[in-house]
Structures are given as C-alpha cells and as structure tokens.
Length: 328
Ligand code: PBG
Image: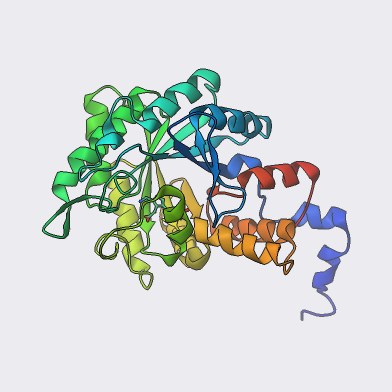
C-alpha cells in the first residue's frame, strides 16, 4: 500500500517543508557552557588537548562571560582549579576558595546568568580521587559531609544550581538536607546521576589537573556496559531531591539518555564531555570534517535521544552558528 501512494521524499522536497516538519529543535536555550577558573590575574592558559578552551582567572573569565551573555547562553558550569591540593580537598569548601570567589564576582556582574557549580573533590585532593581516601579506599559516608559543605559554600555565594559529580552513594540526599537546613531550599541540584567510568574524561583531567594518582574511578563511577543500573541511579537521585538528572558522557550513551527520558519525567541533561570535544577538534584540525555541520549533527543527535539540556564546550560556537542560521 505504501509506494507510490506514499512518497517520503515529498516531505523533503523544499527548505520550507523540511523546516516545517523538523522533529528536533536544537536551541541556544538548551546549552550550558563549562568553564575552568583559576587563581591569579590576567590568566588565560590554553588547555592543550582542548583547542579553544582555557583556564581563566576571574578577571579574564568575566570578559569571556560578556560573550556568553551576548550570545544568550543561559548557563555556565564552573570548575575550580585550587592553589593547593591536600588530602582533604580543603579549598573546595573554603569561603574564599576559587569557585566561591568566582561565583560572587559573576553574580555581581551577571545576575541573570544561571551559575552551575560542579561539586566534587578530585580537583582539590592531592590523590585526585572524588572522595576521602583511607587505606587506599575511597570512603563513601565520610565524604558526604564534605560534599554537603562544598554545596553550602557555593549556595551561600549565590550559585543557582549545584551539580554533584563524585558518584558517592547518598550525596544528593546529604546535599539536599544540608541546603534545607541552612535556608537554601531554592538551590537546585543537577545530579550527575549516570556518570560512567569513561576514557573520554582524559582531556578534562589535563585541564583540571585532576587525574587520580593511584588506581582508577571504577569503584564509584559506572561500568560502561550497564544501562539498567543507570535507571536505578536516576531513580535514587530523584527520590533524594534532584531537580535535574544527568547522563555523562553523551555520545556513547545515547541509549541511556533515551531510556531515562522515557522512564522519568524530569529535566534531563547530557554532558558532551572533553574527549568528545577533542575528537571533533582533532578531525577538524586535520581538515577531515566540516566543524559546523558535524557539531550541529552531534548535538541534534543528543537532543533527539531525549536530553533537554546539553553541557558542551562547543556552546559558544553553536550559539553563533544557530544565530547565523547554519544547519546540520
Ligand atoms: C569531576 C568531573 C569530571 C568531569 C566533570 N566533573 C572528571 C572525572 O570524573 O574524572 C569530566 C568532564 C569532561 O570530561 O568534560 N569528578
């Protein structure tokens, strides 16, 4: 009964009809732009494995944010690079830590920009793990208190959303009750719920100097082979008080994004991580792919899979291209 009664090409026959029946709409409103903030002044230190990405001191980051605001990107995700690392990640929860100072400065100049802060210890600990270490083990329950202190110190300076990325059990609940107890009941939690033990974080660890000094993260981040487990993680985080859940990385986990979207009706973010960005940049530098079209196609795929929000180092470029009307 189908052909020739149905000719699928009729719906593809002009730009106008393609626009009209397009199912997935990638928009600047979906984007969060990650930034690395460091001590000092006038610093814009390029990250070698991530062309176009720098570690910024607060003054230079504010300049960068002028462009973010001009492009109408709704939010940023902040990572801090501390002055000193120790066993307990002390700078992570200091009132005058790098992220706390940065958030204060940003909120003063850009009160309407959504400021998301990453909550984790790995950038701050000398051993590079996401929790406290005792006898070579990453300890769960004692880490929760520190994570809650980090979140409180970020909320206190005006962070809109705190985003725990450590993968300790119970962290969302611990953070939610600390926020409630201290009067920050309006602070959102974006939980890195299904965060996999991925090789795609390699370039980020160069950017943040956060590679584990022994072992790996497989005892807390998820096994790339698992998807049912991701649904359990998401369910727990929702029960513990998450407002937004996340799947990370994005491209090798599009099925997980889809399944979370179908099962839970909560805003879903996907993190298009550093290694995914670097692979595209490397191919672009070789002249092997068309950057604009490849990036827009990848992000459209992440959106089509079911994510509402995309965290991506390509955010500024994408915002520009969308304004120019570039299509994948
Ligand atoms: C901190 C954290 C990591 C990323 C986000 N938060 C690194 C890691 O878990 O090792 C990765 C982001 C990226 O690769 O772009 N735990």
